[in-house]
Image 1 (cartoon, one colour):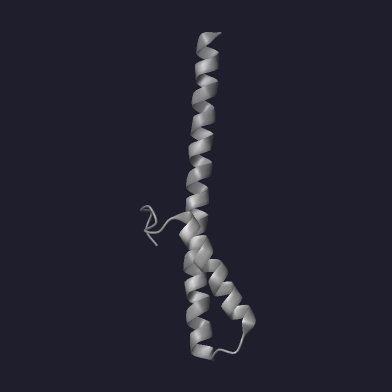
Image 2: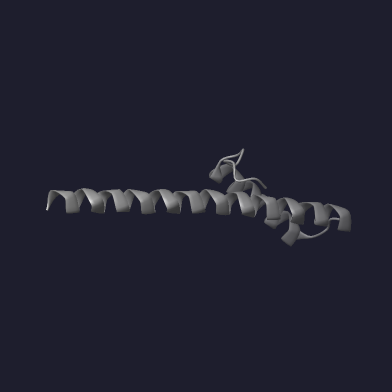
Length: 74
């Protein structure tokens, strides 16, 4: 996966990942479909992680900016 912004939003990826996990846990599907679902789940987990990492970076930058503003005022 590239470093570009994911093509689907965090909530959509999370919801689809939950659905994939539920289908895998329920069983009753063939090996090929199970493998395809597992691979899709891995993709979705990566997308979710990228969204979370991006949010964490944005929060860290905002906190640094806020601290810089506070030290400039002192």
